[in-house]
Image (cartoon, rainbow, N blue to C red; front, side, top):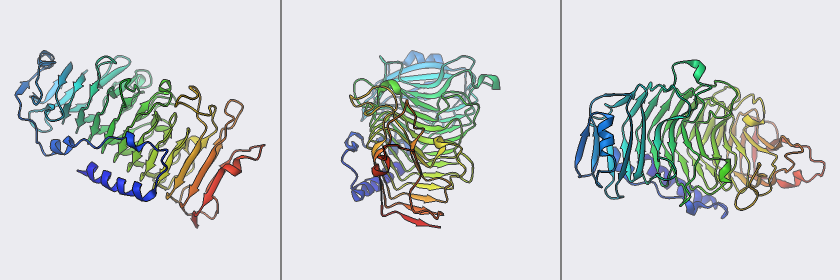
Length: 439
Protein backbone atom coordinates (compact mmCIF):
# COMPACT_ATOMS: atom_id res chain seq x y z
CA UNK A 1 0.00 0.00 0.00
CA UNK A 2 2.88 2.32 0.80
CA UNK A 3 4.35 1.93 -2.69
CA UNK A 4 1.02 2.76 -4.33
CA UNK A 5 0.62 5.88 -2.18
CA UNK A 6 4.18 7.00 -3.00
CA UNK A 7 3.49 6.56 -6.69
CA UNK A 8 0.45 8.83 -6.52
CA UNK A 9 2.31 11.54 -4.61
CA UNK A 10 5.28 11.28 -6.94
CA UNK A 11 3.07 11.59 -10.02
CA UNK A 12 1.53 14.78 -8.65
CA UNK A 13 4.98 16.24 -7.98
CA UNK A 14 6.19 15.35 -11.46
CA UNK A 15 3.23 17.07 -13.07
CA UNK A 16 3.69 20.18 -10.93
CA UNK A 17 7.41 20.37 -11.62
CA UNK A 18 7.07 20.25 -15.42
CA UNK A 19 10.06 18.01 -15.81
CA UNK A 20 12.05 18.09 -19.04
CA UNK A 21 10.61 15.98 -21.83
CA UNK A 22 14.03 14.40 -22.32
CA UNK A 23 13.27 12.15 -19.33
CA UNK A 24 11.80 8.89 -20.59
CA UNK A 25 9.24 8.39 -17.83
CA UNK A 26 7.10 6.54 -20.33
CA UNK A 27 9.51 3.62 -19.94
CA UNK A 28 8.37 3.11 -16.33
CA UNK A 29 5.79 0.43 -15.54
CA UNK A 30 3.10 0.66 -12.83
CA UNK A 31 3.65 -0.79 -9.37
CA UNK A 32 2.63 -4.46 -9.49
CA UNK A 33 -0.88 -4.58 -7.93
CA UNK A 34 -0.28 -8.10 -6.64
CA UNK A 35 2.00 -6.77 -3.87
CA UNK A 36 -1.02 -5.55 -1.92
CA UNK A 37 -2.68 -8.94 -2.27
CA UNK A 38 0.42 -10.69 -0.97
CA UNK A 39 0.51 -8.49 2.10
CA UNK A 40 -3.14 -9.30 2.83
CA UNK A 41 -2.48 -13.04 2.33
CA UNK A 42 -4.77 -13.27 -0.69
CA UNK A 43 -3.09 -16.21 -2.40
CA UNK A 44 -4.41 -18.13 -5.35
CA UNK A 45 -6.90 -20.97 -5.29
CA UNK A 46 -4.83 -23.65 -7.03
CA UNK A 47 -3.36 -26.86 -5.69
CA UNK A 48 -1.14 -26.71 -2.60
CA UNK A 49 2.10 -28.74 -2.76
CA UNK A 50 3.79 -29.12 0.63
CA UNK A 51 7.52 -29.85 0.53
CA UNK A 52 9.96 -30.62 3.32
CA UNK A 53 13.33 -30.81 1.57
CA UNK A 54 15.21 -29.44 -1.41
CA UNK A 55 14.91 -32.72 -3.30
CA UNK A 56 11.13 -32.40 -3.21
CA UNK A 57 11.32 -28.85 -4.58
CA UNK A 58 13.51 -30.03 -7.45
CA UNK A 59 11.05 -32.84 -8.20
CA UNK A 60 8.22 -30.32 -8.65
CA UNK A 61 10.22 -27.85 -10.74
CA UNK A 62 8.42 -27.12 -14.00
CA UNK A 63 5.35 -29.15 -12.98
CA UNK A 64 3.12 -26.69 -11.12
CA UNK A 65 0.19 -25.04 -12.84
CA UNK A 66 -0.83 -21.36 -12.72
CA UNK A 67 -2.36 -20.58 -9.34
CA UNK A 68 -0.64 -23.44 -7.52
CA UNK A 69 1.31 -22.96 -4.29
CA UNK A 70 4.62 -24.46 -3.27
CA UNK A 71 4.56 -24.50 0.54
CA UNK A 72 7.76 -25.04 2.49
CA UNK A 73 7.14 -26.93 5.72
CA UNK A 74 9.34 -27.04 8.79
CA UNK A 75 11.68 -24.34 10.02
CA UNK A 76 15.41 -24.83 9.38
CA UNK A 77 16.28 -25.64 5.78
CA UNK A 78 19.97 -26.44 6.22
CA UNK A 79 22.30 -26.82 3.20
CA UNK A 80 19.25 -26.59 0.94
CA UNK A 81 20.22 -26.07 -2.68
CA UNK A 82 17.65 -26.15 -5.45
CA UNK A 83 16.51 -24.63 -8.73
CA UNK A 84 12.79 -24.14 -9.25
CA UNK A 85 11.05 -23.26 -12.51
CA UNK A 86 7.43 -22.20 -12.66
CA UNK A 87 5.15 -20.51 -15.15
CA UNK A 88 2.16 -18.76 -13.72
CA UNK A 89 0.11 -15.93 -15.17
CA UNK A 90 -0.62 -12.37 -14.09
CA UNK A 91 -4.01 -13.43 -12.75
CA UNK A 92 -2.82 -16.79 -11.38
CA UNK A 93 0.83 -16.62 -10.27
CA UNK A 94 2.62 -19.56 -8.70
CA UNK A 95 3.26 -18.76 -5.03
CA UNK A 96 6.23 -20.05 -3.02
CA UNK A 97 5.84 -19.45 0.73
CA UNK A 98 6.38 -21.02 4.18
CA UNK A 99 3.71 -23.19 5.75
CA UNK A 100 3.55 -20.82 8.71
CA UNK A 101 4.36 -17.09 8.39
CA UNK A 102 8.00 -16.37 9.18
CA UNK A 103 8.84 -19.99 9.93
CA UNK A 104 11.39 -20.96 7.25
CA UNK A 105 15.07 -20.05 7.56
CA UNK A 106 17.73 -21.26 5.15
CA UNK A 107 21.00 -22.00 6.92
CA UNK A 108 24.28 -23.78 6.28
CA UNK A 109 25.50 -23.64 2.65
CA UNK A 110 22.10 -23.03 1.11
CA UNK A 111 21.51 -21.44 -2.29
CA UNK A 112 18.34 -21.18 -4.37
CA UNK A 113 17.46 -20.28 -7.96
CA UNK A 114 14.09 -19.30 -9.40
CA UNK A 115 13.23 -18.80 -13.06
CA UNK A 116 10.15 -18.74 -15.23
CA UNK A 117 7.26 -16.28 -15.22
CA UNK A 118 4.82 -14.84 -12.70
CA UNK A 119 6.28 -16.38 -9.57
CA UNK A 120 5.67 -14.89 -6.14
CA UNK A 121 8.29 -15.85 -3.55
CA UNK A 122 7.22 -14.60 -0.14
CA UNK A 123 8.43 -14.62 3.47
CA UNK A 124 11.67 -16.63 3.36
CA UNK A 125 14.76 -15.96 5.50
CA UNK A 126 18.45 -16.63 4.94
CA UNK A 127 20.20 -16.45 8.30
CA UNK A 128 23.92 -17.06 8.76
CA UNK A 129 24.19 -18.87 5.43
CA UNK A 130 27.85 -19.73 4.90
CA UNK A 131 29.95 -19.83 1.73
CA UNK A 132 33.23 -21.57 0.95
CA UNK A 133 33.62 -20.89 -2.78
CA UNK A 134 34.05 -17.86 -5.00
CA UNK A 135 31.29 -16.21 -7.06
CA UNK A 136 28.41 -17.64 -5.06
CA UNK A 137 24.83 -16.31 -5.26
CA UNK A 138 22.50 -17.10 -2.38
CA UNK A 139 19.26 -16.14 -4.14
CA UNK A 140 19.47 -16.25 -7.92
CA UNK A 141 16.61 -14.77 -9.94
CA UNK A 142 16.91 -16.13 -13.47
CA UNK A 143 19.11 -19.07 -14.39
CA UNK A 144 21.45 -17.53 -16.95
CA UNK A 145 20.58 -15.72 -20.17
CA UNK A 146 18.54 -18.62 -21.57
CA UNK A 147 16.33 -19.00 -18.48
CA UNK A 148 15.35 -15.57 -17.12
CA UNK A 149 12.70 -14.75 -14.55
CA UNK A 150 10.03 -12.38 -15.84
CA UNK A 151 7.20 -10.57 -14.02
CA UNK A 152 8.00 -12.14 -10.66
CA UNK A 153 7.71 -10.70 -7.14
CA UNK A 154 10.15 -11.40 -4.30
CA UNK A 155 8.55 -10.04 -1.17
CA UNK A 156 9.42 -9.97 2.52
CA UNK A 157 12.71 -11.83 2.22
CA UNK A 158 15.31 -11.54 4.95
CA UNK A 159 19.09 -11.89 4.64
CA UNK A 160 20.96 -11.71 7.96
CA UNK A 161 24.74 -12.04 8.44
CA UNK A 162 25.35 -14.34 5.48
CA UNK A 163 28.85 -15.20 4.28
CA UNK A 164 32.05 -16.85 5.36
CA UNK A 165 32.76 -17.10 9.05
CA UNK A 166 36.44 -16.47 8.26
CA UNK A 167 37.18 -12.71 7.95
CA UNK A 168 40.09 -13.50 5.61
CA UNK A 169 37.55 -14.62 2.99
CA UNK A 170 35.45 -11.45 2.95
CA UNK A 171 37.71 -9.60 0.50
CA UNK A 172 38.50 -12.70 -1.58
CA UNK A 173 35.28 -14.68 -2.08
CA UNK A 174 32.76 -12.77 -4.21
CA UNK A 175 29.21 -13.22 -2.96
CA UNK A 176 25.86 -11.81 -4.07
CA UNK A 177 22.87 -12.02 -1.77
CA UNK A 178 20.56 -11.64 -4.78
CA UNK A 179 21.22 -11.50 -8.51
CA UNK A 180 18.52 -10.48 -10.96
CA UNK A 181 18.09 -11.51 -14.57
CA UNK A 182 14.90 -10.89 -16.50
CA UNK A 183 12.13 -8.35 -17.06
CA UNK A 184 9.45 -6.74 -14.92
CA UNK A 185 10.54 -8.19 -11.58
CA UNK A 186 10.01 -6.69 -8.11
CA UNK A 187 12.01 -6.97 -4.88
CA UNK A 188 9.92 -5.50 -2.06
CA UNK A 189 9.60 -5.17 1.72
CA UNK A 190 12.78 -7.16 2.37
CA UNK A 191 15.72 -6.79 4.77
CA UNK A 192 19.40 -7.11 3.87
CA UNK A 193 21.61 -6.86 6.95
CA UNK A 194 25.19 -7.47 8.07
CA UNK A 195 26.88 -8.26 4.73
CA UNK A 196 30.70 -8.15 4.63
CA UNK A 197 31.80 -9.90 1.43
CA UNK A 198 32.93 -8.26 -1.78
CA UNK A 199 29.93 -8.40 -4.10
CA UNK A 200 26.52 -6.75 -4.02
CA UNK A 201 23.48 -7.19 -1.85
CA UNK A 202 21.46 -6.97 -5.09
CA UNK A 203 23.20 -7.24 -8.45
CA UNK A 204 21.21 -6.55 -11.60
CA UNK A 205 24.03 -6.04 -14.06
CA UNK A 206 22.77 -8.04 -17.03
CA UNK A 207 20.02 -6.18 -18.87
CA UNK A 208 17.61 -8.33 -20.91
CA UNK A 209 18.05 -8.41 -24.67
CA UNK A 210 14.33 -8.85 -25.38
CA UNK A 211 12.91 -5.79 -23.61
CA UNK A 212 13.41 -3.35 -20.78
CA UNK A 213 14.60 -4.54 -17.38
CA UNK A 214 11.96 -2.52 -15.50
CA UNK A 215 13.12 -3.87 -12.16
CA UNK A 216 11.35 -2.46 -9.11
CA UNK A 217 13.29 -2.28 -5.82
CA UNK A 218 10.65 -1.07 -3.36
CA UNK A 219 10.51 -0.40 0.38
CA UNK A 220 13.49 -2.54 1.39
CA UNK A 221 16.02 -1.99 4.20
CA UNK A 222 19.75 -2.31 3.56
CA UNK A 223 21.59 -2.14 6.88
CA UNK A 224 25.11 -2.47 8.29
CA UNK A 225 27.56 -3.06 5.46
CA UNK A 226 30.99 -2.26 6.93
CA UNK A 227 34.02 -1.13 4.98
CA UNK A 228 36.45 -4.04 4.54
CA UNK A 229 39.11 -2.61 2.20
CA UNK A 230 39.55 -0.22 -0.73
CA UNK A 231 38.58 -2.58 -3.57
CA UNK A 232 35.71 -1.79 -5.92
CA UNK A 233 32.80 -4.18 -5.79
CA UNK A 234 31.18 -3.60 -2.39
CA UNK A 235 28.08 -1.79 -3.75
CA UNK A 236 24.68 -2.32 -2.17
CA UNK A 237 22.80 -2.24 -5.47
CA UNK A 238 24.04 -2.16 -9.06
CA UNK A 239 21.93 -1.72 -12.18
CA UNK A 240 23.67 -2.57 -15.45
CA UNK A 241 27.40 -2.66 -16.08
CA UNK A 242 29.80 -0.78 -18.33
CA UNK A 243 29.36 -3.31 -21.14
CA UNK A 244 25.68 -2.32 -21.40
CA UNK A 245 26.79 1.07 -22.79
CA UNK A 246 24.17 3.02 -20.82
CA UNK A 247 21.27 1.12 -22.38
CA UNK A 248 17.73 1.99 -21.30
CA UNK A 249 16.49 0.15 -18.21
CA UNK A 250 13.18 1.62 -17.03
CA UNK A 251 14.06 0.58 -13.47
CA UNK A 252 12.53 2.11 -10.32
CA UNK A 253 14.32 2.30 -6.94
CA UNK A 254 11.85 3.73 -4.40
CA UNK A 255 11.03 3.86 -0.71
CA UNK A 256 14.17 2.04 0.43
CA UNK A 257 16.33 2.74 3.49
CA UNK A 258 20.11 2.48 3.23
CA UNK A 259 21.65 2.72 6.70
CA UNK A 260 25.31 2.43 7.78
CA UNK A 261 26.31 1.04 4.39
CA UNK A 262 30.02 1.85 4.09
CA UNK A 263 31.32 -0.83 1.73
CA UNK A 264 32.70 1.60 -0.86
CA UNK A 265 32.12 5.05 -2.32
CA UNK A 266 29.22 3.81 -4.51
CA UNK A 267 26.19 2.78 -2.45
CA UNK A 268 24.00 2.50 -5.53
CA UNK A 269 25.76 2.25 -8.89
CA UNK A 270 23.72 3.02 -12.00
CA UNK A 271 25.26 1.75 -15.22
CA UNK A 272 22.08 1.94 -17.25
CA UNK A 273 19.85 4.78 -18.40
CA UNK A 274 16.24 5.82 -17.78
CA UNK A 275 16.14 4.99 -14.08
CA UNK A 276 13.97 6.65 -11.40
CA UNK A 277 15.38 6.92 -7.85
CA UNK A 278 12.83 8.46 -5.51
CA UNK A 279 11.86 8.76 -1.86
CA UNK A 280 14.76 6.67 -0.53
CA UNK A 281 16.69 7.42 2.67
CA UNK A 282 20.48 7.25 2.78
CA UNK A 283 21.38 7.42 6.48
CA UNK A 284 24.98 7.60 7.66
CA UNK A 285 26.31 5.72 4.63
CA UNK A 286 29.92 6.49 3.69
CA UNK A 287 29.30 6.66 -0.03
CA UNK A 288 27.06 8.13 -2.71
CA UNK A 289 24.35 7.46 -5.24
CA UNK A 290 26.49 7.14 -8.38
CA UNK A 291 25.11 7.88 -11.83
CA UNK A 292 28.18 6.19 -13.23
CA UNK A 293 27.26 5.23 -16.82
CA UNK A 294 23.77 6.55 -17.28
CA UNK A 295 21.61 9.10 -19.04
CA UNK A 296 18.18 10.51 -18.15
CA UNK A 297 18.02 9.54 -14.47
CA UNK A 298 15.37 11.19 -12.27
CA UNK A 299 16.49 11.53 -8.63
CA UNK A 300 13.54 12.86 -6.66
CA UNK A 301 12.49 13.26 -3.05
CA UNK A 302 15.39 11.35 -1.47
CA UNK A 303 17.07 12.13 1.85
CA UNK A 304 20.85 11.99 2.20
CA UNK A 305 21.55 12.39 5.93
CA UNK A 306 25.17 12.14 7.02
CA UNK A 307 24.21 12.03 10.68
CA UNK A 308 27.43 13.89 11.38
CA UNK A 309 29.74 11.14 10.10
CA UNK A 310 32.68 11.85 7.78
CA UNK A 311 32.71 10.95 4.08
CA UNK A 312 28.96 10.59 3.78
CA UNK A 313 28.14 11.94 0.35
CA UNK A 314 25.18 12.61 -1.88
CA UNK A 315 25.26 12.13 -5.65
CA UNK A 316 27.94 11.84 -8.32
CA UNK A 317 26.86 12.63 -11.88
CA UNK A 318 28.13 11.53 -15.26
CA UNK A 319 26.19 11.46 -18.51
CA UNK A 320 23.37 13.65 -19.78
CA UNK A 321 19.83 14.84 -19.09
CA UNK A 322 19.60 14.00 -15.40
CA UNK A 323 17.13 15.75 -13.08
CA UNK A 324 17.69 16.14 -9.32
CA UNK A 325 14.54 17.55 -7.74
CA UNK A 326 13.15 17.82 -4.22
CA UNK A 327 15.98 15.99 -2.45
CA UNK A 328 17.32 16.84 1.01
CA UNK A 329 21.04 16.80 1.76
CA UNK A 330 21.59 17.04 5.51
CA UNK A 331 24.72 17.15 7.69
CA UNK A 332 27.15 15.88 5.07
CA UNK A 333 30.46 16.76 6.71
CA UNK A 334 34.21 16.57 6.04
CA UNK A 335 34.26 14.99 2.61
CA UNK A 336 37.73 13.60 1.91
CA UNK A 337 37.45 13.92 -1.87
CA UNK A 338 34.96 14.57 -4.65
CA UNK A 339 33.80 10.96 -4.66
CA UNK A 340 32.03 11.80 -1.38
CA UNK A 341 30.84 15.33 -2.27
CA UNK A 342 27.28 16.49 -1.74
CA UNK A 343 26.84 16.73 -5.52
CA UNK A 344 29.80 16.18 -7.81
CA UNK A 345 30.10 16.29 -11.58
CA UNK A 346 33.42 14.84 -12.72
CA UNK A 347 35.16 15.71 -15.96
CA UNK A 348 34.30 13.26 -18.73
CA UNK A 349 36.13 11.36 -21.44
CA UNK A 350 33.21 10.67 -23.84
CA UNK A 351 30.92 13.27 -25.38
CA UNK A 352 27.89 11.01 -25.87
CA UNK A 353 28.30 7.91 -23.75
CA UNK A 354 25.82 5.23 -24.82
CA UNK A 355 22.64 5.94 -26.82
CA UNK A 356 24.44 4.91 -30.02
CA UNK A 357 27.19 7.39 -29.24
CA UNK A 358 30.54 6.74 -27.61
CA UNK A 359 30.78 3.28 -26.14
CA UNK A 360 33.65 3.65 -23.69
CA UNK A 361 34.76 6.01 -20.98
CA UNK A 362 32.89 8.43 -18.74
CA UNK A 363 30.15 10.61 -20.19
CA UNK A 364 30.42 14.40 -20.06
CA UNK A 365 27.90 15.75 -17.51
CA UNK A 366 25.55 17.92 -19.56
CA UNK A 367 21.96 19.14 -19.77
CA UNK A 368 21.45 18.59 -16.04
CA UNK A 369 18.74 20.24 -13.92
CA UNK A 370 19.23 20.57 -10.14
CA UNK A 371 16.13 22.18 -8.67
CA UNK A 372 14.02 22.54 -5.51
CA UNK A 373 16.53 20.68 -3.30
CA UNK A 374 17.48 21.53 0.30
CA UNK A 375 21.09 21.61 1.47
CA UNK A 376 21.09 21.68 5.27
CA UNK A 377 24.40 22.31 7.10
CA UNK A 378 26.59 20.45 4.61
CA UNK A 379 30.35 21.03 4.38
CA UNK A 380 30.21 20.90 0.59
CA UNK A 381 27.74 21.95 -2.09
CA UNK A 382 28.21 21.30 -5.82
CA UNK A 383 31.48 20.48 -7.60
CA UNK A 384 31.75 21.03 -11.36
CA UNK A 385 34.54 19.37 -13.34
CA UNK A 386 36.25 17.34 -10.65
CA UNK A 387 39.43 15.49 -11.61
CA UNK A 388 40.01 17.32 -14.88
CA UNK A 389 43.07 15.88 -16.64
CA UNK A 390 44.36 14.89 -20.06
CA UNK A 391 42.38 11.64 -20.17
CA UNK A 392 39.23 13.39 -18.92
CA UNK A 393 39.10 16.75 -20.73
CA UNK A 394 35.33 17.26 -21.07
CA UNK A 395 33.89 19.70 -18.54
CA UNK A 396 30.22 19.98 -17.53
CA UNK A 397 27.93 21.69 -20.01
CA UNK A 398 24.52 23.34 -19.64
CA UNK A 399 24.08 22.83 -15.89
CA UNK A 400 21.02 24.54 -14.38
CA UNK A 401 20.81 25.04 -10.62
CA UNK A 402 17.48 26.64 -9.75
CA UNK A 403 15.23 27.28 -6.73
CA UNK A 404 17.37 25.38 -4.23
CA UNK A 405 17.72 26.30 -0.55
CA UNK A 406 21.16 26.32 1.09
CA UNK A 407 20.93 26.42 4.90
CA UNK A 408 23.94 27.06 7.10
CA UNK A 409 26.24 28.83 4.64
CA UNK A 410 27.29 32.44 4.13
CA UNK A 411 28.08 32.01 0.46
CA UNK A 412 25.96 33.19 -2.46
CA UNK A 413 26.81 30.52 -5.01
CA UNK A 414 25.79 26.89 -5.28
CA UNK A 415 29.20 25.84 -6.59
CA UNK A 416 32.06 25.40 -4.13
CA UNK A 417 34.41 23.89 -6.71
CA UNK A 418 34.81 24.61 -10.42
CA UNK A 419 37.64 23.19 -12.46
CA UNK A 420 40.35 25.53 -13.69
CA UNK A 421 39.33 25.93 -17.34
CA UNK A 422 41.87 27.86 -19.40
CA UNK A 423 39.29 28.43 -22.14
CA UNK A 424 37.01 30.29 -19.73
CA UNK A 425 33.94 28.41 -21.01
CA UNK A 426 32.98 26.48 -17.87
CA UNK A 427 31.51 29.44 -15.92
CA UNK A 428 29.25 30.17 -18.90
CA UNK A 429 27.81 26.64 -18.65
CA UNK A 430 26.86 26.90 -14.98
CA UNK A 431 23.50 28.65 -14.69
CA UNK A 432 22.23 29.65 -11.23
CA UNK A 433 18.86 31.26 -10.56
CA UNK A 434 16.40 31.79 -7.69
CA UNK A 435 18.48 29.90 -5.12
CA UNK A 436 18.36 31.03 -1.49
CA UNK A 437 21.19 31.07 1.06
CA UNK A 438 20.77 31.31 4.85
CA UNK A 439 23.57 31.37 7.47
